[in-house]
Image (cartoon, rainbow, N blue to C red; front, top):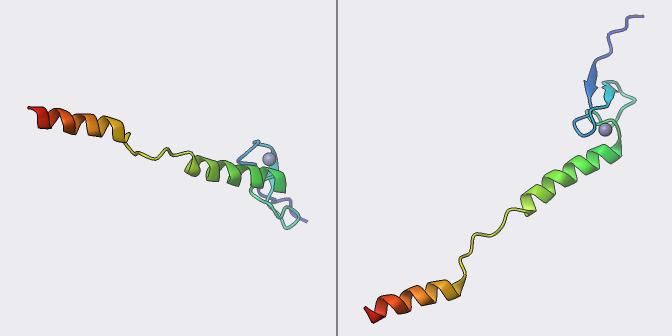
Length: 68
Ligand SMILES: [Zn+2]
């Protein structure tokens, strides 16, 4: 037998993971790490704030322009 198993590090916790059929969550070491990492990506996407300016400031600016 040859010992040519590829070893990677879990992207979430950096734990060594052997790249074989026994690790169905590779490159993650476990389902938990996979879900956490995917969840982190999703959270990051949803965390982007909406760039909507407050209406009050805009109304004040328009009012100021009219008074000139
Ligand atoms: Zn992990």
